[in-house]
Image 1: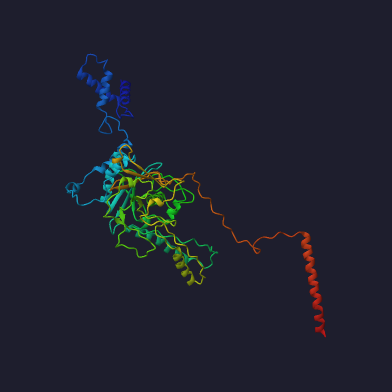
Image 2: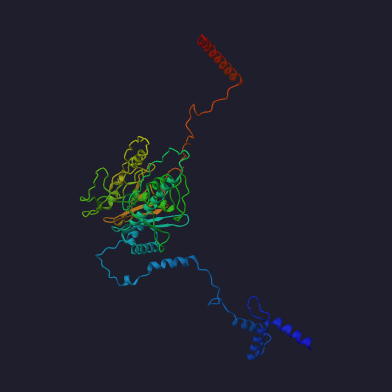
Length: 512
């Protein structure tokens, strides 16, 4: 009897062993199933026992979430929709704001402008255009901008860039440049302290001195006159590009590289580029703007009250001509190109819009060396660089591989009375301008590369620098032969004997 109880207890313990998957045991499950059979008392209990068992398990199922279905991963379109959703959110202040037609807004009507471009077969689609329009509105709410416009779109290998060109309000947007200058000065001060602590016995230093660095133009002037904000998709955060330097513009002219769509990506090229993709993007933007931003002749004019202090520098500002009455479409599509002018300053080969004399900076450095006792080297005065003046007609632009720099056409030859003028750049494919009697706008949609008829060839490496100056005192001579050494030894012995013979008479005179 004791053995039977022991076997029953052992069997019961086995049935109460919990499953690793459901944390339940067979003993309790059989009790629940039998209880369900006795409660319902079906006629075919044996046939539906498996179904009853499944229902009992279903009642004890504890899902990890509030649904019985598997939770799938959200598709990338869901995240994109969440970002774009913020474009259409209206704050309470915007709801209560009254519309005043007399008060202007800092952003133009992009929908109307893109409608005119679409007549010439240029555009991004209605949905994307409206999203960009709303993104420009959000940009003006976060930054104190006086004006902002859709500059264009640059394609990348991974992502694309949507670009906005903006101007800050007076007194705004200058703090960032001051902080950049402080960061540049701090390392120089630390280096001077380290030099003072060095020992007096120093190894010889190179006498070579790098050419003076051309400083960047101040904010709101020259190549940094406009600020650029970029994002990969309308709805994402706008990122302001850092100021561009002349060195970055000059280096951008010597390379040819596609964009990746990542601002922090390195620009791996030869010659090495001084910066990352954000700097390279800004350099290309100012190059494209200086070449392709045009307006109808007479739309802008110079302010007579704002005359430059130096007549040689030329004007760098203009105003909208209040007496402009518009131009006929036939004048805008004239193949002579006399109806259009550049309204963005020309970039000199130096990488600046206003020429900087590097000798002035070099002379200041030499004055410090004179205090230390070094002689001043004579530096040749460079010839100032000059370029086309502002509001110069585009008919003076250089040809592109034997073709005109610009192509003009009507948006439609079928209905020329209602067509608009379309001007496209042949130097920067993707740069277009539309013009009506009183309106115009510029846009760029492309890869950010200049036209080149022949395949691109990177510049050759510079000539190897000499390790040391060659001369008789430095060059190694050829070892003499045995015969030459014996002849030299014999000549030296004869010379010594002759010297002794000449000294002997002098000794005899001393004895007398």
